[in-house]
Length: 240
Ligand code: PXP
Image (tube, rainbow, N blue to C red):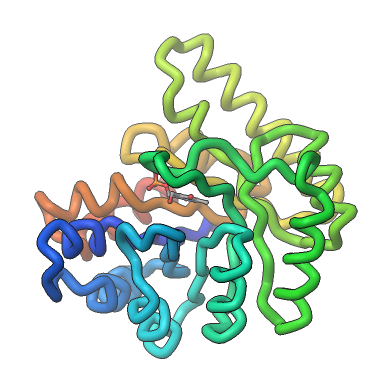
């Protein structure tokens, strides 16, 4: 089974917002990623709208042909927008105003009641829910209790690991947690900090369904173009 690739296009909008101009347009980026073979398009509508904005998600909803995965916090205002947009999938993530990027997974142990509520609302509107969590048994167990079928394991610690020993430790953990979640009947995705160097080992994890990658692909696109950057990543995933 080939692992799927979801491309996060937030940083195309980051570049646009650097000048508050119209380009580069994330919509065009989504089209190119799909042409290059991406299996889904991800955009994070942050509460501070630092990159993707409300108009972007409306337009993406209309034009994405594969699967539109809206990354979002559990803030009520964002949930209201998601219910209007009705993405194919909603990935619930933690969000802190001053963070540079999503730090850590959503703590579904501590926030069990609130996350369950949000899950129920989204599922009632036929939006598939994906929960972005740390690779830990206690987190996975709570997801199972919420009747959510899909998780995304946070690969931040793996991508930040420097020594061989630490990399191996993080990989082992991701592999064990993937197996654990799969045995509970969950679909397992992973993402955060994955790039052209560290993606191969993750792609070898049995049972992994989809990798969600943004920053490294958009960065590579500066040198070789977005279509080539996506194709290169797909080839690396396929080869492993
Ligand atoms: N998956 C989730 C849930 C994320 O929050 C992010 C970052 O927006 C990504 C994947 C992509 O991470 P990166 O940009 O580091 O590839």
